[in-house]
Length: 166
Image (cartoon, rainbow, N blue to C red; front, side, top):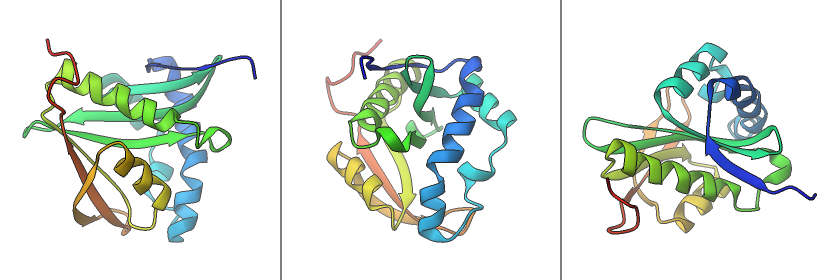
């Protein structure tokens, strides 16, 4: 391949690539549930642009191509909500998702004061669940997505001393 994947903060110029990548990546999730109305597939480009502008958004790049992304924001209770983690299907299984997650976690602690991390994934999404368990997330409950998909809610405490504090 000759190039390495880099992780960086997303910019407004990345919004369209994130939008297209998200649509591609979440097709397999939609198929798993027989539901092609899941949030990542019906989100508008304008909404992605708004998230890039307001949330903590990271991308993985291979050259100029966005091949992964993740978003996070901090709620009033200090919990960082992390979502829409995706990696291009041809690059899955190489640690890019874990690197994106780590970048988002660090920024959410350092820049936004997160006290813990929270995310959710579909109950049949075994690959996602394996990744989240491997990086320290534990199941804390269930919920129902707006799209009707049963979700598993996972959380992870901010490890003491793991991230620099400002």
